[in-house]
Length: 117
Image 1 (cartoon, one colour):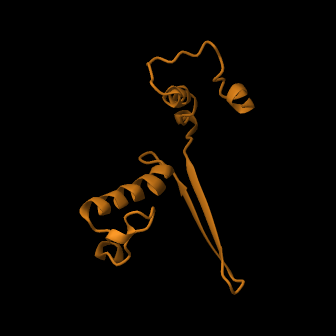
Image 2: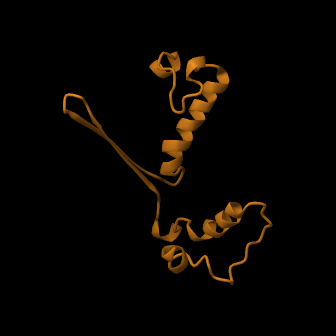
């Protein structure tokens, strides 16, 4: 809570929420929108770093990593989360995902010709 108070100053009584919201989380998001935006003058951008380590039953460890930076057009978060989610949604709507996988989050049918190319 200290960072919310000291760094973001969200407990300040002077803060005014402009719109009427039904849920507190929506009001909280409005407070954070202005405080957590990129500083265009200092060329700030977002970054996504993901490291996966998989240990096999033969005591081998495999590691993969992904490092993505945002740019002027898209954020790293939109590239690594938004685009894949949009593609998965389109596959689901088109009926390109097998029925047995529809309830398993993040699993796409690898036999799909679009994914095989």
